[in-house]
Structures are given as structure tokens and as C-alpha cells.
Amino acid sequence: MGFYDDRILPRLIDVTCGASLIDPLRKRVTAGLHGDVVEIGFGSGLNVPFYPAAVEKISAVEPADIGWRLAGKRVAESAVPIERSGLDGQSLPFDDDTFDSALSTFTLCTIPDVMAALQEVRRVLKPGGTLHFVEHGIAPDPSVQRWQRRLEPIQKRVAGGCHLTRDTAQLVTDAGFELIEVDSFYQHGTPRPYGAATVGVGRTGS
Image (cartoon, rainbow, N blue to C red; front, side, top):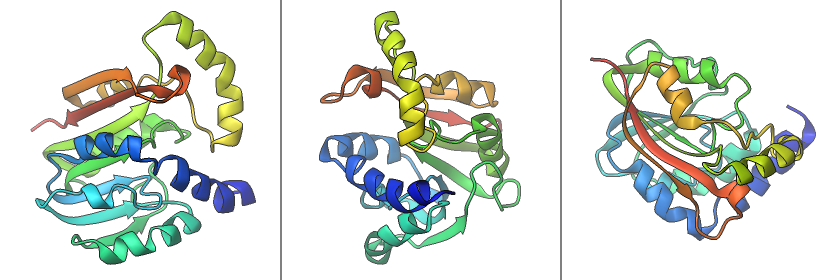
């Protein structure tokens, strides 16, 4: 990772993704998590206050040392044990069928090989395990999509490879998950090219 991606970007993400307008989405996407959970793109731990009581342990996958350090206070105050357990969502250091649930929030847009990451998540989930996700991606309206395609090259440069045009629900389905919940909408208070969001839950086969 370069200096910007490793030292500066995690701080920017901590501020922008820590905005209070995102809190309802975090509460919504973490609902139903239980047991042992792997969170890819843990960042600065912005989801920690929203983990439900049924979560027993979090294995945090986070490449940026600064991001993990920024998470220190949230991790220390968490009622749920949290351990930094991996650096790359595309290659998870866990055995098959390890976790009950997985969590991804505004992460799948940046992973270079997103299909590899999703297949890794499916591999480490137990049969019937669930992936909970909230991501921004391709908008439903062609006029907004055109703006997303114009803005995406700049977005990728300044936001750590973040894509604006990925179809998260389709990617999750293509990776072999059964979508049991999905809702796509424009996030309130965010410009539409950046605020086309999808919240959902995908389940592995039993």
C-alpha cells in the first residue's frame, strides 16, 4: 500500500463513513448477526457500537495499520471480543466452515478482485451462514449511471480504488449466495452518483 492509501485514506474514511447519517444503515445491516463473525474491511471499527448481543466474537480483516489503530478505542470498549485476524479479503486465513455470519460495509466497492473476496467469504461461512452487506454501487437510473461512469476514474484514484458502478446484489448472487433480503435505494443526504446503496443478506447453501 502507498503512503496515501495506508496513512491518509483511513483517516478520511473514518471521518466520511463515520457521519451520523450512516448510523441507521449500520444498525440495519448488523441486525441478525450472530455467533462467530468475520468482518471484511473492518476499518476504524465504525460498526462496533451496532453489533447485536447475539454476536460472540469478531474476526476483523483490515489491511491498513492506521485504520486498526483508529479503531483502538472502539475495540477496547466493545462488549464483543474483537481480534485483527487478516489483511486481505481476497485471501482469508481461516478454515472452511468457520463462521456463522459475515459483514461487509462499504468494502466490496474497493476490493480489486471482488469475486475472489466473495467466494472466500462463502468458503469460510458455515452451511446456512449469512453475509450481511451495505454497499454503494450502480444506480437504477440511466442518467445517474452516466454520471457514475464519468466520476468513477476520479473516485478510484482518490478513494482507494472505490468503484461507483458495481452491482453488489448481482455480484453476491454470482458468488453463489442466495439473496434472502435485498433493498436498493438512494441514501438520504448524499449526491445520487455516490448515494445509490444496497442493503442485503445472502445465505450459503445448507
